[in-house]
Amino acid sequence: MLPLVGLLFCMLSLIALPVSAENTLNQDQVEIPAFSKAQLGQILFFDTNLSKNRSQSCATCHNPDHAFIDDRDSKVDGMVSQGDDLTKFGDRNTPTASYANKIPRITRSDTGVFKGGLFFDGRQRDLAGQAGEPLLNPVEMGMGSKTEVVGRLLENTFYEQAFKDVYGDAVFDDVERAYEAMTDSIAEFEKSDFFSPFDSKYDRYLRNEVEFTRLESLGEALFFSQQFTNCNRCHQLKAFPKSRGETFTNYQYHNLGVPKNERVRAMNGLGADYVDRGLLEHPRIDDPNQAGKFKVSTLRNVAVTGPYMHNGVFKDLRTVVLFYDKFNNSTRTINPETGKPWRKPEVDQNLALEEEEFKARALTDEQVDALVAFMKTLTDQRYEHLIDSKKEQ
Image (spheres, rainbow, N blue to C red):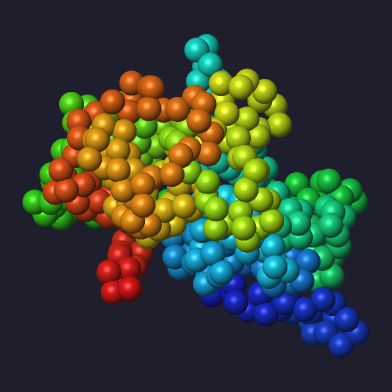
């Protein structure tokens, strides 16, 4: 983590309560050290005071101890996140913040292919834009306005001084300026190597520090083979396989034919008739050919960041591989998690089944296991113990 941080928990305890006659003196007596933008952002990332009921922070849904996902127990088993009021639920699975600092801004090619952008529909162009949304979302942190958020910052003399030190004395003269400073500092923290260490077994393997097992090696060969799986057609950014710094996504958009998560819809109140149109939910995209398409997720830490798909409908990583295999394997008719046939797509237009990237050979059970074994090697070193803990569950 960033070197602030013998100081982090001290600072968090200092800002945990609003300023009052009772605690103002103590805060005024504390000498606030100079902070960088990233260090200030780190403190903000963990501050529950920035939610309506003062119970939820960025880290609540992006837990750094669990690959930056929401690993809390809930009535929907982590498929989607529960809001600050403990009654509302979202409709999309909370994506990992791991390696989000590598996501490019959204662009559209001459052939109409979209790439990049934050969130599953690319609606925010950068980390700062993404950081500003959850605070004001009534289903998430629930603050009523930017003015309210800035007011929470000003409740604490620590923030008042730290923001002025980092962004200038006039930072609080304008609400928009103060809010942008807050989201900018959170983004600077998220740009740090703490979120993208590139130290998985796969990375160590590329540096000749470790060897793969037979099953992992088979999975690697299958993954990068365009004669068998085509996995890397969507899950490779670099020009060549086995390149260092690979994020295992090309950040493009596809409609995989994912079914509705009926359990989530029953809980969040959107109802059975609601349809998540994916990229078409982007406020500046109205092309019906984008309906049902969602951004390809990174496979970094994928073994420990379930549930899977944009709506958390699948619990197990092996199920996801079987779901893909059913495109090309007529024997894969049953969802192993339900014991029933795969349900129909939520959006049955623009299906990836018709795209070249998804034409591949049928997989054997051993090949499915090999792909899962390979994807486990993409887990950051500090999260590798979570793979073993999942086996025990």
